[in-house]
Length: 254
Image 1 (spheres, rainbow, N blue to C red):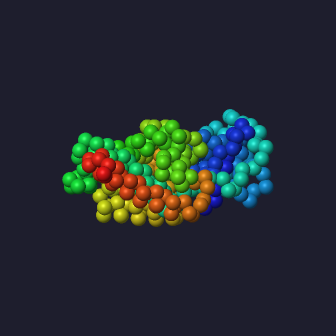
Image 2 (cartoon, rainbow, N blue to C red):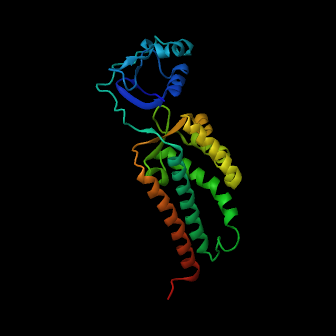
Image 3 (spheres, one colour):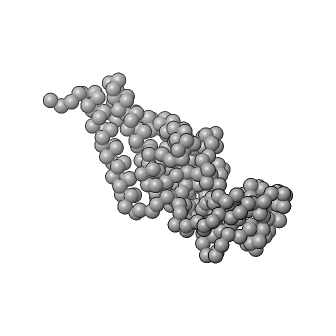
């Protein structure tokens, strides 16, 4: 899948998939006078001068000659800039965040003398914590653009224009993620929804929640070893939660 950058008034933004760039042109956020570049091009070119976008320009709702895109940036973007995150990286990051939040909740509840894991309510607590956790993620993504799990793997969530999404948009995104991506935490449904989402990502398509919100997940650096680190960190979080919850109820062993 080709990736593109666009520039307005000397500032470059990207990388974007071609379909998102077309969307920006059709909706009028980019005009024929703005600058575009993709790896392989020797220099920035006006959107209106590129044949590949000719039909998109014609279908645009914007009066293309009303605004000038300003000068192009002095340098070309680096083609090794943040790339779209793959399905496994996104999954590992998401589940680290889920288990981290559940562990914190488990320890806090244990301080009241109640043990979720031993009293048969772990599954119910997991179902309840998912919506809460996703809303907490929405708050984090609207302010810093990442979460603990995503930060560990170098991931960030951005709008298609590279900016942070607003809280309202992200709440909607997380709601769709809960329904279409995590199946409300129900094991068999989650397996199906995760498989369908992976198929879309493998084909370089957007997930339902990212498409609806106009966002995507980018990876600032690609280090395969970080997946194993994230998996190990998730197991350590779970084990630490068990130990701390026991200590909260029974005290330190003498």
